Structures are given as C-alpha cells and as structure tokens.
Image (cartoon, rainbow, N blue to C red; front, side, top):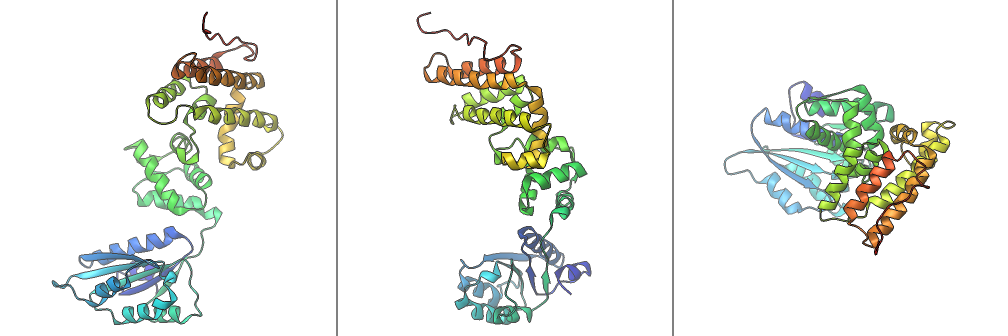
Length: 340
C-alpha cells in the first residue's frame, strides 16, 4: 500500500517514494504526508532538492539523533536527479537512518531498471500518479479550491483550466490571487475569473485594453490616471491598445464564419480569450476601429511633440474613441497647435 492508502488507514511509515510528472501532485503528496506525521507529534521539517544540495548536511539530519529526541521529517524533492556519484551513498544513508527520521522522496520520473530505484523501493512503498488529462483538469480546479477552503462554480473552474493551461501549480497560484481579490465571499464565480485572472498582467498588460473593449470609460480613465501617476513607462499602453484594435478588426472579419477555436488558432489566443473578445469586437463598428487607429497615431504624435501633457492627451483619446459617433477618421483632432 502506498502513501495515500496509509494516510487513509491512519498510519504513516518512515519512508515513501512518490512519482508523478505533475509537480502539484508531488507537492500535494508532501503536504499530506507532513500533516499525517504532525498528527503523531511534532516534527522538525528539513527539505532538500537534488542535485544542488549538501549531502553532508542530509547525512547529519538522518544519522544524528537530536539532543532532545525530537522526530524529524525529511522531504527530498527531485530525488531522481541525484547525481550518479551520490546515488549509492544516498541509498546507504537512507537505509541506515535513525528511527527519529521519516523520509519522503519525490520524483517526476525514475528509471526502474536502475539499481538506485531498486534500492529506494526496498526502503518503503512507492506510489505513482499519472498525468492529469485535459478533461480532468476542471475537477482538479474544484479540488484545489476546496483545499483552500473555497468553492468554485463549474463554469469558473472550466475557465481557469482553459486559461491557465496544464500547470496545476499555477491553478493554485491563480486561485489564491482571485480569493485575495474577492475577499470573504467564499465562492469563485465566472465573473471573478474575467475580472481578475484574465485582466492580470500574467496574460498581458490587459487592463486598459479590456476597459476600452467594454467601452467602460470610467475604468479606462482610472487605469490611465494610475499609469501616469506611477514611476514606470507612460507609453506602453499605446502599442498594446493598437494591437488590441487590430485584433478586434481581424475578429470582426472572422466572427460570423469561424469558430472560437479557429479564430484562436489564427490570432494565437485561447478559445476562452476569443469568447471574451467577441462581444468587445461587436461593440465597435469597423469604421470606429479604423478611426481609433488614426486617433491613436495622433495622440502618440502629440505626446512626443509635447503639445499637451501625456495624461491629458490620453484621456481625450479615450473619450473620443468610446463616445465619438462620427466616422473617427473624418473627425478633427482638435488639439491646440503651437502658436494658435
């Protein structure tokens, strides 16, 4: 029986080896193991990661009984990456460890034909977890949210799985971020994913482009003012927004004839992002988007020529882009010129 079965049975051995290509499953196994050990009494926890470690320090932990007889828990991550020159020594140390030391080794994969694996397998149970396939990933989002003490809707779980990708560790990181944002609600909904995860800088500096796409002038102005009051670059929003406008133009030409997945493939996006951008493209006419490019060129020129403060030029641009009902290409950019 492996680690999972032993924990369920209320017992915990002194050595386990956990193998999985999924980093989250290895980390989760270590967490469950440490919790199970703590239920039997306090343990000092020591963590090592192959191959860059001090094996002499590990030897000291495994063989030297603490002065007060305290138990120790030793987690050895990436034990499969132990250098060949150290493998025999490590196996001997683990075999000779004192009764005070409990050890969990984790590995992404390991060659079962090698003497090193066979030596480890003699020390205690080996448990393997396979790769989590795409159709199972929303279920893992639910589980990870539950481990954090929250629930999540099915639609939101599917969105996290699709947008974040295959990395379960990233699921946990993004869920923590969302939970921090939404406070005490205790349940993650689809709208939280849209507002926090998709708009986060991990998926591009999206805040200003998202506000424009939603024609949310108040939010767009707030983002611009924050940008210009900060210490970073003041012009990064212009190429970003130009790219967004061009993307919306391309989407308009494909929206009626191609699926989300087809559009995603052509634009280098995920289908989830395409679904978010569809209503944004629909809010603008083709003429407005073309006019927006012209307006963007003019505001960039005015800012570079110092005709007016950058923040003011940016705010005027946003107002005209989102509320000008005329063909923007024909609209005069009524910026006061020097000498006028």
